Image (tube, rainbow, N blue to C red):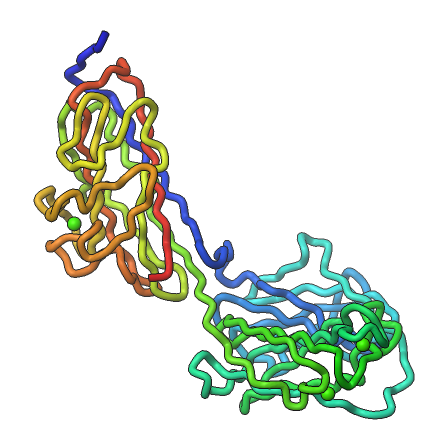
Length: 393
Ligand SMILES: [Ca+2]
Ligand SMILES: [Ca+2]
Ligand SMILES: [Ca+2]
């Protein structure tokens, strides 16, 4: 038996989740990422990391938990950048050291425990040098990637000499784009002897982190490493978005009524990634026993229509004449995600939409809800969830 109700009691909850298709965004913009310890020798080690924004960095260190010493980025005490490269020197051999990373004014101390590293043994100095080197360029293939960090590992490739991988080494790329490292100083992972490698048949594993967070990698034979062929850094885009409200509560509304968000309930979506983003929308929970319709005129028994428009941030109101101007172009579907374009989730009311949104730009997201013509659920609340996804255009 169908109970027809004049009034429908609903709670429309908009739960918007951020889904990153490429790289998970850091919770804090300045939180150190890709922290690496390299070049550990008898008396020094290097701490390097990446941040999402340009900032300064230094290392507090000591051989007790009270630390007490500071080491700065090799580019100077006042240097600010995306890549951070600090050499901690003047240490004792075979000794444990504690350190904290201070980046952008915040201290990262491994939840109070400090990070630790132990210096290597004293080895007799290597008799000769074998410099591996190469060049790194930005994505244009021309501009030297000054400030990139190249991580270097020797890897056994001929079953002779030291097996497996060496300790991690690194080189900070200079103004002409060059990295270099004396392979005779590379140790094994236990740091108790030099890594014994062959002049050909062994490998150098090269991983570069660019001055803007880009990445590149390469594997070269030890016979091909002076110079190694150049690496081109490709921009690694970080996707991210923020929203200023996560729900739109309609509560008691009449059957067959239509509602659109207004200046008080509009949602602002901001691109907090570092490149262009296009937004997609999908109903990920239709709301109990209600169903969404893919037809803008499809409101029916327990069936509603939910549509959306993205506009420029400056718009303070929009009316329903701009929703679904073409066909059902602005209806949010369940079961599949729809990608924003000039037409889809866009309108002739404004010139901006949910497609190719620049980093730092905001869009208004307007929702239109057409209620079911009848509700058989005896006034139960309905929570409808919508997921917004950011993708690279
Ligand atoms: Ca070997
Ligand atoms: Ca070589
Ligand atoms: Ca449209």
